[in-house]
Amino acid sequence: MKIIAQCEIPDELANEWLQHLRDFDATHRGCHFEVMMQTGRTVSVREMVKALRVEPELTIEQVFKRKRKG
Picture 1 (cartoon, helix red, strand yellow):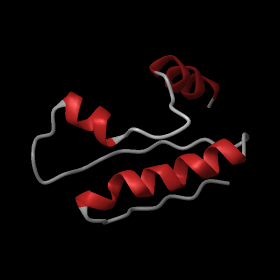
Picture 2 (cartoon, one colour):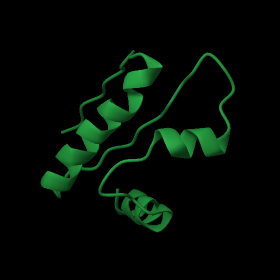
Picture 3 (spheres, one colour):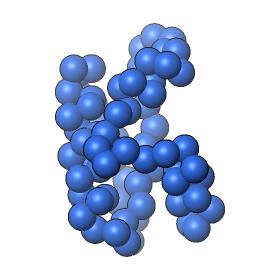
Picture 4 (tube, helix red, strand yellow):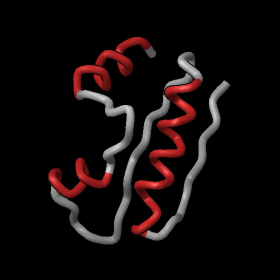
């Protein structure tokens, strides 16, 4: 099953929402999430990576490995 959600949240809640999603992902190993970020301004890669920090952390290798499985 695929669930597609478009979320509008304040910038200051982005990391909290992503952590919630990562917690679900870590608890339920069969799940896979693809997340896109859209802002009303240009965001540097450094700022995007900082905003997307979650625990347990996903390495770039894990991200690409998971993408290939789908």
